[in-house]
Image 1: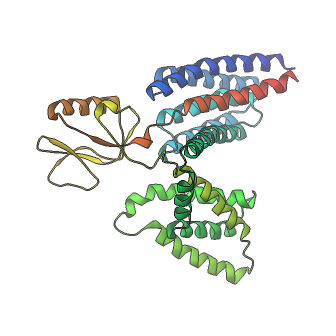
Image 2: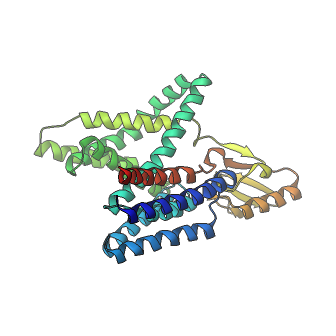
Image 3: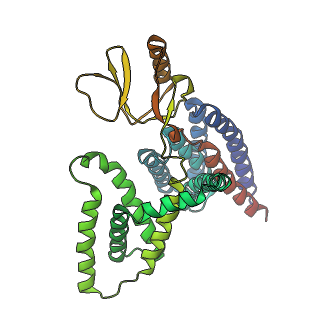
Length: 348
């Protein structure tokens, strides 16, 4: 057994556990991850990485690539609304604390990212599914899911992804390749929709491109392995079922006293005279107070509370489902799982 590795792994495990309990507590109770303790946790990870360079365990290039990949995944997930900015920074810090212990840092970064998301969304999915069964609404949810999956937009997205997966030959499983390409284009579409609003829908472009790609494939290769298309529809069904469980999609109306930092504004708020109104439409004759989508902060909530006291009656339309998910416990749980696995491997 490598004694130095064992001591380093034990120290990292203890640090991750201590900081993890604190970050999980603040994320669950206040929906925030404090920056100063997070900076200390990050510095500890950077220092551990520098030690591996001096001892020759890892090269500078390996560490820089791991840092770049972790930063890209952390902040990229924030950009695509998979989690919030604090979660992205915590993921980077937690990942940098465990990369010095890995022979292949890049693989560990990817594994930690996938495990963090999987733990959160899988457990949340099972919990919401259980609540749906208890309330007797499962059949309604399934019907709604089927209707959404076989809508024209989803069909065009799926066929486009299917045709792209036949052309792009990556050295991975066919089903996984198709699903990854679908997720990539779906995330890109979620960001591009705002630029095409009122002009043309992106799935119209998908449909045209899919027809062209399938025609090209037909002229060069007669084989259409439909099995990966069926797998893709199975994946889309599960994802759509997840979003159909009324966690992300419904609107709830809150008084300012019911608001919490991390909630997302659903409509633009305008000040017209002495009234604040919520509207999804642009009003040129009113002053914009807050523009949706916007993640509410403590200062925003205090401002709205002050306006409520002035106007006596105020209801702010907030996407109730957009209360930020506390990702910190899952990011820490993923890091602890990896550390324990590495430690047990050394004890053997």
